[in-house]
Every structure is written in structure tokens, then in C-alpha cells.
Image (cartoon, rainbow, N blue to C red; front, side):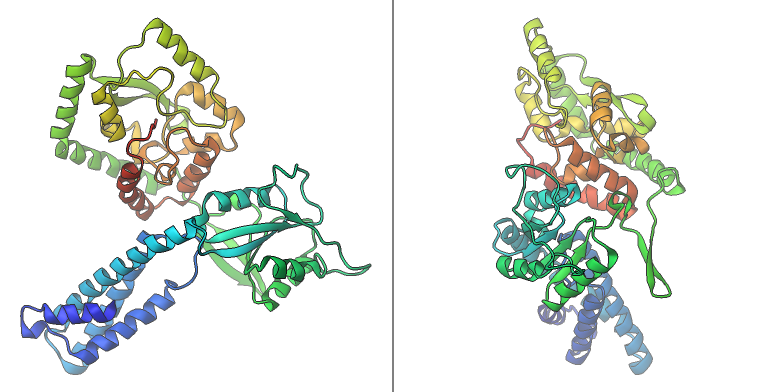
Length: 464
């Protein structure tokens, strides 16, 4: 792709002064590849992130272009070096990002179909190991295919409950400190595993260290699930005190100046967005008024920052219920599962044709820009829930209340991961808390970009 970009930049140059010689383009390409290798673009990653890759490519090509400009001005005193470097940067970044996007689509499809993926052995069949295995089975795009647990003292659960088989191997004799004895190598060979994940276990430090070295001796890569994993953020710093590594965790502070700046910029962006889409808002309001009459907006109590209630705004999409339909809806709400989030149509479907379109296109959510403008909500954050459900989930869902450390959002990290409508509330909480503890302007920008394809992907599906 770099070669094609070089040819395109030369052929399409409007003036001879903007054409770069072949030697300079070759040096530029080598620099780009070197920076991409250094920045880790070609390392295996469990989750492929196209937007992260695009950012890395833009950075690598920009640094290479700056180096080329500096070198050519310093050595050859070329007055057109900067313009030529900018052309090389634009063409290279565009071509490589396009190729990376195609690769991402193909690789994700192949991972989901099980064509590619590392066969994985999980050491430890405890609750965390089981949760990790279930996550991998639910999301094959992470590139790890769990084949079995290896645990001599697994957590007791029925064979039907086990997401994958549990293998066992007792030590070979008294004084044998090796974890699982020779059974580890046998399991690796039987399963043809190329990756091992070490979950929590009761084994000693020396035994687990020996396990790590034995896996490496077999050419098997190893990952370790850290303790206190709920508190581990993306912003980590690894230092060493002598030969002992120490990891410092720096979570995002919901009460820091970064969030104050975020909330202020949210209001400005919401005001601009309202002005830009005012014709669409007026058209949706007129369609709602024509089909359902007044009021045009639907107001519903939701819980936001620090557990405070506010009225979320939406365009009305359903007619008023009859008494029998009201009873049916109430019964559905009462009998809803405690671990599934509310969403979609509850009870009798009372949506009008216009309302169905507004919901499927998410246009009915646009009045929430006024909630952002008033300071009730943010553009990006956990989706707000009704007070009755908040009380229910506070009692039954681990860390549910932690979502209320920040303002609710129109879109959020869990929504762009496909957790909309009647999906697991525990999974939503996990992703929402990840967002809160790792929030950054770049993550907000990524979520906004990912919202559009998420809406297109979910078009036609019931949602909250």
C-alpha cells in the first residue's frame, strides 16, 4: 500500500515541484514501516480496534513525513520538501488505513466463523476463569478459542454449567512442586493449544512461575488475569523496584477538571447540534403532532449523576394505552428478569407507523440534546434508567450504583458494543464502568464515531 501511495502521489502531482524522487519515497516508506513496528501495529491483539489502528497509522506517517522534511531541508536545502512530505503523508495514511480497514473486516469475519483464532487452555476453573471463558465464547472476535480448563480443584458446578470441559491432573509424587505435574504438557499437546491463560488459583508463587516457564519452553504464549482486575485501567505504568515490577493504576477521576471540561464542551456541542439539525427536529415534531397530537414530547423520570432524578425527553412514539393494555404492560414490567435490562416494546405494541420509524432510526432520542444543554445529561455516558429499575438493579447487579458517578449519556460505550434493548444488565454495567474509569477525549470521540454504524446495525431491532 505504501508503494501504491507513492506512485499515486507522484502521478497525481499538479506540478513538477511537488513530485518526490523515488529514493526519498523509498526512505519514507522504510521510516513508516519502522515506526509502525515500534508502535506495535503488527503485534497480535485480542481485540482489533480499527480506530486505534488508524490513529497509529496517522501518527507514524506524520512522524516519518516530519523526519523526511527536516532531513531534506537540512541536507539538500529543498524549498518544496514540506509540500512534498505533506503529499506523501496524506497518500500513505489514506492508503494504509483503507487496507487496514479491509483487513479488519476480513479478520473479524474469519474469527467469528472460527476459521482463525488461538486454541486456548485456561488454568483455573474458578468463578473468574468461568467468566473469562464465557466472555471468549460470546465474543469470538477476540481471537482466543477456549478449549478446556485445567484445574485439580475446580469450583463445584454441574457438567452442564461448565462452558468448556474441565481437565484434571494430580502431581506425580510427594515433593513435586510443579503445578499439574506432567499433565500440563499432555493437555497442551492433546488440545493443540497455542495460548494459555492463567486465572486465579491457590497454588504457590514458585509453582505458577514454573508453569509460566514450562509453557514458554513449549512455545506457548501466556496471559495472566490480574487480581483486582475490576480496578485495572488502561492507564498503567510499569516500574521496577530492583527486580520486582510494580504496576501503578491511574483511573479517570469523575470529579476532576477533565470531567468539568467535558460537561462544559458537551453543552456547547449540543447547542450547535440543535441549530444544525433544527429542520429535522421540526419535521419529527410535526409528524408526531399529526399522528399523536399533543404533547409532542414524552417525559420520563430517569436517574443520573449521583442518583439524582431528571426528566428525559423523547419524541412520542406510542398512543395512550387502554385500561386492559395498561394492565398487560404492568404485568410485563413486574415479571421482567432481574438480570436483563428493560428495552423495546413492553406489553401491547402501541407504536404508530411514524413512531416505529422514529424509534428504529433513533430520531426520537434527539430531544435529549436539550437535556445535555440543561446539564442533566452528557453526550457520552451510561444510559439512564428508570428509578424503579435502578432500585431493583442496585440490589441484584454487582457495581450497578457505580454507573452514577458521571452524568448519563445519549450514547455510551456499552451501546456501541451492541448492548441495547433486552440485553444483560451485568454486561452493560461492566462496559459502563470501564468507560468511567478510562474516559478520555479520544474514547468519547471513538464512541461518537462508532454510534452511527451501531445504529445502522441495530436498525429495525427493538431498543430502549
